[in-house]
Image (cartoon, rainbow, N blue to C red):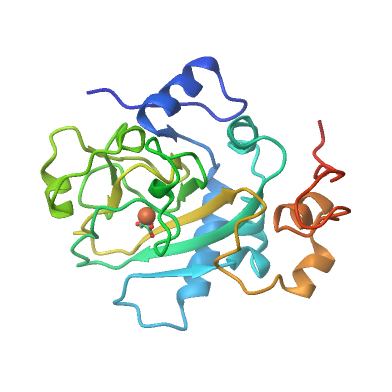
Length: 259
Ligand SMILES: O=C(O)CCC(=O)C(=O)O
Ligand SMILES: [Fe+2]
């Protein structure tokens, strides 16, 4: 089976089709080597105060780490995000995820709001969270803590009676990529993390784009210091833009995109 592969930059018609059918797109070389190094060092700093033998995800690392802040509107993926989300969206959350050596793998799931699953909204789950995972460590082979996806599973209301059976599906894809690859995916695609048999930790930085009416889930409020020093566009992306017609009526200024 083939892999839905894309290139950094604007969304091509082929990429759009691959994304719509499978629910994800892998973009090799979304980040260059310096960007990967910067983001990896940032992720290690963020996780350093915590036990090193645990799976963990930390939110809003971009507030304190400029290398991660640059991922919020990174040119390798940002035009594709706008193609899929339009102009009025926010970064609902961001997760710096670490998978320690010896981790056994997670369970298959869809992402989103566990207490009110997005699959309840329609039989074909709408795109509510567009997720982008930037690979910061090597995942070129299986058993490196890779993500695994069930292509097209966002497009059907069918469920296996036992979610554990997802792991035996012959159509699952184990996502392989070098550091710097990005995995753009629809929250409705069934996916999971897999085991890490390496002797090093696996790091992915996820950025989650969503409509502005979703409640941010990695922060209770935006850091005032971050808002002060970041760009107008990034302020808008964390939801700090004027709402002349509360709560979500007409009259909004677009976030200040360059084009
Ligand atoms: O392994 C990862 O980075 C992502 C795991 C995952 O699917 C999640 O946290 O929702
Ligand atoms: Fe997930």
